[in-house]
Image (tube, rainbow, N blue to C red):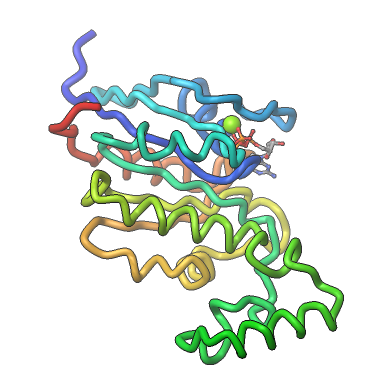
Length: 215
Ligand SMILES: Nc1nc2c(ncn2[C@@H]2O[C@H](COP(=O)(O)OP(=O)(O)OP(=O)(O)O)[C@@H](O)[C@H]2O)c(=O)[nH]1
Ligand SMILES: [Mg+2]
């Protein structure tokens, strides 16, 4: 069978965000509640009409994130998956989204650290290791790489079947997606489990242009 269009994409995001679940659904139409963490990466192929898509699904654990940039070079799109079932961080406990966010003086940082300590909410829960903050930092670091300039980005807030899931609007705000410029950026709220917005996700993917460069 002859495909009229060949695409190559990368699926990234923190550990247990739901990347492999989405890729499995797109590739073989199956969802499982019992998943094993991806060690290294998986390569899968998706077919939709006359479009063939080669998918690099990279493990989200910290030790695999150094591979992200390498796999993203020359792809037609980057999918960044976030777990919308995780509650948003308390804005008052996060240095970045705090009132006078532009002022990064040591005094203010110290004050915030003291506030965290006083409340008993350590950085594990509310500071730089909150998954939303980690995902935001990882995404922005990746988007700043010159080799990845211009590659379209689709942020997928998955697990929207979970009650109280964070909306796409909140993801756009919290992850500061409007500050990512010079490339196409979209954000959908999806569920692999209930198959919500999987069709629009696939349509977005199939509308990409084949990449001209090679890894
Ligand atoms: N409720 C719900 N759970 C989901 C959904 N998608 C994935 N999960 C669950 O989330 C867990 C992690 O899913 P994975 O797809 O393995 O996550 P991953 O991003 O590939 O994780 P790593 O490979 O470690 O980076 C599994 O228990 C899945 O069943 C969803 O749409 N809804
Ligand atoms: Mg995985």
